[in-house]
Length: 250
Ligand code: ADP
Image (cartoon, rainbow, N blue to C red; front, side, top):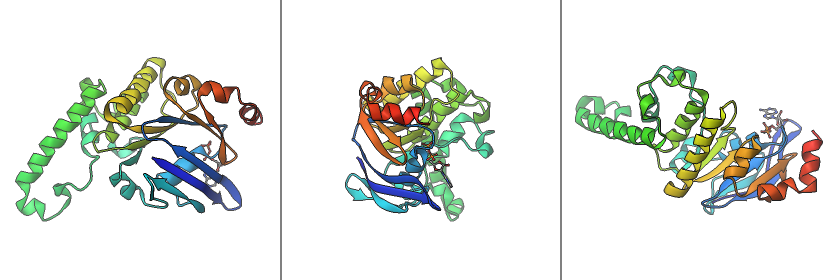
């Protein structure tokens, strides 16, 4: 689904991504691991349109998507989860989900004049969809809770839920397990696998927790010094001498 070809992203003279080439297969849950500073987040930012590359290309289903802005990628079904912004933390979990899809009639001024009925219908449909997502995530009981008041793990579920409000094809997850307790981490892992199996989502996941990676990811790509170092199952990469050296060297 995604092909990255010889991608570079430099900051001044520093090569954060330094000739990375890799592929993310349709239907996979691909893990992206590597020592701190390996360039994983920068690579994500370039693929997801948050940062322009210095050089190189990114393709999605064979189409060149290099440098497209996040909203254009969003419409193609390429999404990156992002933390719930501070300003939205007093809104309810349901409202946070309802805010995701763009291009609603309510956004256009003229509709406030003669489109009230349509807006009300869209709002009802959005609300029903949000409730369906909350149910899928097993957090229906949090629908009316302010998003800022739920636990860290529940927030992560909500972030995943936002991708379900639109037709996502591939979702990039950055450190979904950071600071989340074991029980919720299992729920998050289950949710990712269900989205993969039942809804056909492809995932690319940056994560430090190797148990989490081993449980849900195949293949695992190791990055070091801005490029791909190895790829395989978790057991294969753990036995790879270059990988061991890259981790020990930092
Ligand atoms: P990882 O996610 O693998 O830990 P990052 O992509 O966050 O790696 O960072 C790779 C390197 O690029 C780091 O050394 C970091 O300091 C540097 N870097 C990242 N973003 C910037 C930036 N905006 N300006 C300068 N250096 C940056």
